[in-house]
Length: 113
Image 1 (cartoon, rainbow, N blue to C red):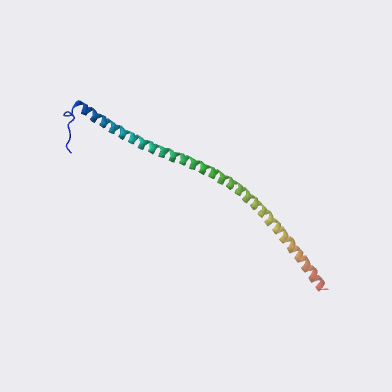
Image 2 (cartoon, one colour):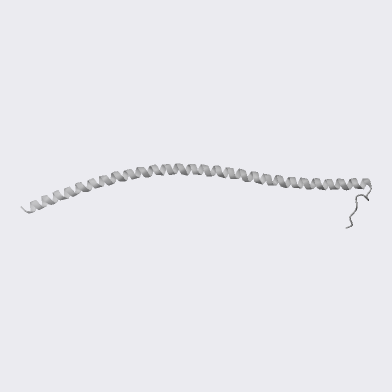
């Protein structure tokens, strides 16, 4: 395509070319603005989602921490019950051993008579 020199065009034509050039520049600027706004909206949406996720994670972490504390308390209580049962079982075993010895002594004493 042959290039036209703007100096060779009449003044009225030069004005039209400038208007078209400005119009094209304006359209290009509007397109860039739309693109920038779309990118900004996407970035804001990602940021909001990240904040929401962080809030969800913090809430979940707090719930897990509460569960951990509750389970630790239950474990401590169960450990204390086990210690009491172990002590009681030892005492029961000692008493049974003495009772068995007593019964055996009684039986061996009556057998010898």
